[in-house]
Image 1 (cartoon, rainbow, N blue to C red):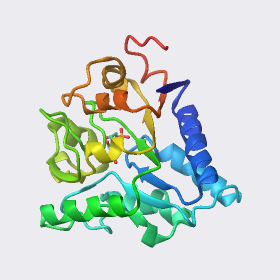
Image 2 (image 1 turned 135 degrees about the vertical axis):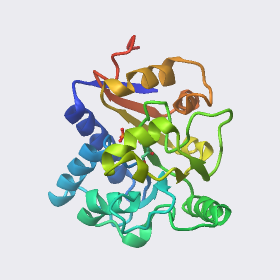
Image 3 (image 1 turned 180 degrees about the vertical axis):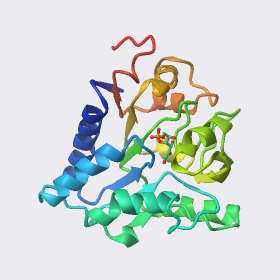
Image 4 (image 1 turned 60 degrees about the vertical axis):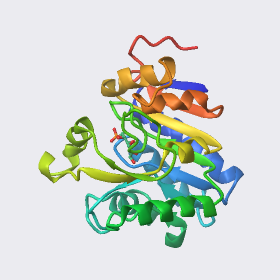
Length: 245
Ligand code: F6R
């Protein structure tokens, strides 16, 4: 595990963008595992800028997103598919057919989970996985629980996750209560992982993820078992009794 402590969100974004850009340059046909949410937005903006300057080419890149709300269509502004298109895909030369996101409209959850596992398998797994972290320690939408769930599954969102994500909706009642998420095994099988965190609200979860016991009660703690994790976090996210190695 390598830890980059940055001054603030902008520096965190620059460091994460550097790592992602290096992956794209070194392996132009990489499979990128992508996250949504506030945390990676700055990094996506910087990658778009580098693409516009001609420094990056995404034409052979494939992507698999971590998760999607159940019940939202790809053109719903609150869906993660919409987020990825408006904040990243539509501004770079990734081929739409090379981007993969769970289908929030599929009502047959077993069918959709099976389909998404096959998509990940057919791509040969993930080269670089980008992760944010929930303030309850979730990664993707693998919420705290009694066991790590290995593969894509449909999950009831934790109350704290619904509250945290309500900022994107006009009221908490509109936040979907379920989501499809990639499982822990798919995440852990990525060749390398960039875990990003910013802000005080993430400090306790990040501390426990890095220094606490490996437990499904704090899903991000599983990352301690992966040998190629880059943690890129700002001072506030690292402020919890943090003792840099
Ligand atoms: C999003 C995802 C989530 C977020 C996490 C942090 O695709 O998988 O695990 O990374 O909820 O969200 P933000 O970045 O909005 O604080």
